[in-house]
Length: 533
Image 1 (tube, rainbow, N blue to C red):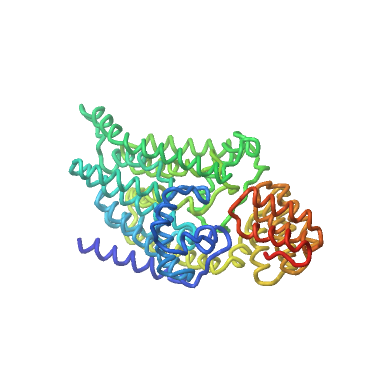
Image 2: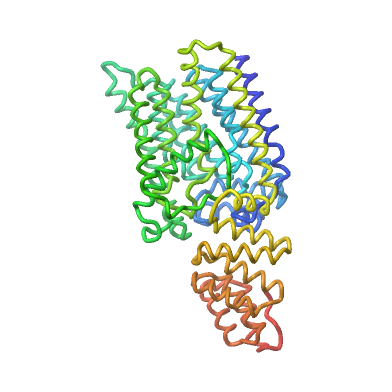
C-alpha cells in the first residue's frame, strides 16, 4: 500500500510539474470561440436555461451535455481568463492518470508496470493536444468516465450486485454525454474479462462465462448504439460528415490502415506534431496494402501468444478497436488523423510495452536496473518533449505557424495562420496565407470570407465584394458572409444589391439582429448613412 501511495503522489506531482506552463497559454482561434469565447451559453455560466440548452442542442456537430456543463462552470468561475480553463483540463488529466494507475494495480497487482503505463499516459507528448486545447475538454472529461467505468466494473466483477452494475451503467452513460468516443468501451470491458480479470479461463464453465459476460454488456451496447445515432445526426446537422463523393470508400480504407500504422509511429517517435494533419488525396493504394499486411501480422502474432501473454492481444485490440470511431471510415472533418484521438487508444500500446518488455528482459537475463533505468530515460524524454510541445500552444500564431512548417499543403492551417496574422495587424502576410489556402483547396470557403473581412477592416470594401461573393457561392447558407457582403455593397453605393444580401441573411436566420438592423438602416436611409457591422 505504501508503494502505491508513493507512486500515486509522484505521478500527480510530475504531471502537474510538466504541464504547469499550460497556464500561460491562451485560447486559440480554432474551435475555442465556438466552445467558449464566443459562446453566450458558456459565458453566462451555469443556469437553468444553459442546462436545458446543453442537453437539447446538437451545437458544433456534437451532443455532449456534460462537456458543455463543464465549460459553463469554468465560464462562471473564470469568465474568459484562459488560465482557469486550462488548469481545469490539467486537473482532470491528473485525475485520469491516478485513475488509470489505480485501475491497473487493482486488476493486475503489478504496481511498477501499472505505474509505468500511467506515467506514459501522463507524459506522452501526443496527449498535449487533449490537455492544452480548451475545446478538447471533452477528451479529458470523457476519459475520466472511461477509467471510472472500468474501475467500477472491476469492482462489480469482484462482487456482483445490482447497485454495483447500475453504477457501471451510469458512469458509462456519463462518459457518452462527455464524448461519444466511449462507444467502444463495452468491447474493452470484454477484453478486460479475458485479461486481467480472467473470467474466460479454460474449463467446463468457460462458454457460460463468456455468454454471461456478453449478456452483461447488452445495456451498455444499447447505450452505445443510441449515442452513435445521436452523434451521426448531430454531425450531419453540422455538415461535418464528408460524403462518399468527396472521399470514396477505397480511399477511406487506405487512409484508415495507414492511419493505424502512423499512430504507432507517433507513439514510438513523436515528431512534427501539428494541430491539423491534412488528408493526402494522392496516397498510393500500396501504402494501405502494406499497412494492412503489417497490422494483420501483429494481430496474428499477438493472438498466437495469447495464452502465455494475454496482455499483448488485449493491448493490441484495445488500440485497434478504440480508434475505429475516429480512424476515418466515417470521415468527420478534413483531418487524416489527430493527436487528440490517441488519448485513450495509446493505453493499449502502453500496456503492451509495460507488461511485455519486462518479460523480454527476464528472458534475456538482463539486470533489473537496466529495465528501471531504461524506463526512467523514456519517461524523462517524454517529459521534455511534452514541455517543448506545450510551447506551441502559447497562442494561435505560434500553433499554426508550426503546423504550416511541419505539414505539407495544409489549407486549414494556412487559413488559421492568416486569421492570427490579421488579428496582429499583419495584413499583407495574412493575405498571402489566405491565398495559399485557396490555392491548395479552391472550394474551402473560410479563407475567402476571412480575407474579405480583413479587407473590410482596412476600409477596402470594393476589393472585399468579390471574395465575400465567392464565399456565399461556395456556401449558400453562410449567414455571416451575406451580412458582410451587404455591408461591402452598401459602402460602395450598390444599395439594392445590399438589400438583397441582408434579406437573404434574414431568410436564413430570421432572428439575426445584426442583419435586421443593417437592412432597416439600408431601407430607411437609402445611401445617406452606412449600415453598422
